[in-house]
Image 1 (cartoon, helix red, strand yellow):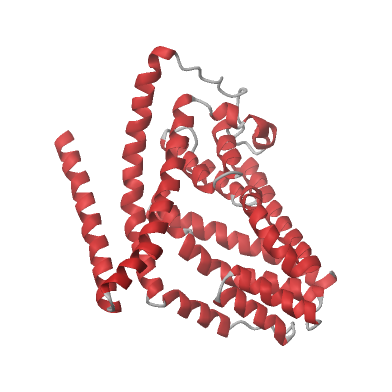
Image 2: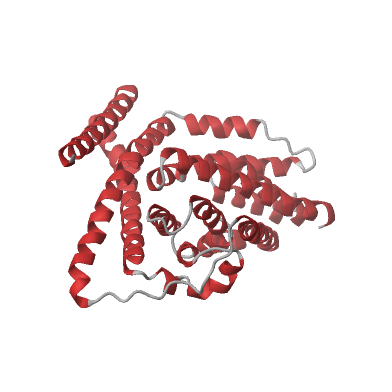
Length: 351
């Protein structure tokens, strides 16, 4: 039995190596060019960011496994216990919620670990993931976005941040209320904090490492080919084509033509470019504050699916599974867009 399992694992690794080499060979054959330039590009745009992603995922998985095995979930989720117990979420979900303020990868790996250990149901894992995708993730990225948005767009930027904050709070609050409705009431006051005897430390460390090694191997098996595939199709221009096709079909008849430029910059390039364009039009008086805010929100809405596919899909597939990771990503991003529309419409009408 063990031999068959080892052979299966070896077969998976051989398939992974073969698939990865095939994708890279196809890319090299398609691109051509000087070997040293191709190697430099492979290192800068594939190997380096991929190793960094796997490092973050590995650390998150190891920390999550240690928290689960040491029984620290109760302590980590204690400060949000009243809020999450109102939503009928367990202490383990509270630990994942707390972790989401520091790292979404850590939070996701913890939730998956608790689900695989049978401590939370799949429904609770999904609902906690959705709660985390609101306010915790927003606050996690706020320090970076705040100091980009404010200098460029000033008052419009503050209103935009307020609308996106309202959308994040709306999502977390709605998912928490839904979990209260859908999940059973939690009985008792939660499990006591586990204290590990010194004699058990060595065996516990071995258990943590074995579980981590098994799960991280699975993460690599899924993440590596997906990441290489996205690198290849991105280098071939797929995402550029998607951005240009999306930008070309964006209709903003209710806003001035300058607003269309802000949306197109947000979609066709990156977040900062849209902000810079909005700031330039606002400073020149070509757009009002309200028009700038609505253009930024619309650019956010249109650009989000492409950015999620390119930047978040590999980690979601690696942490969860191809099917579950894709489902969770599509669900969270779809609901995020709905929440942005719900908060932007009242501002657009009465703001």
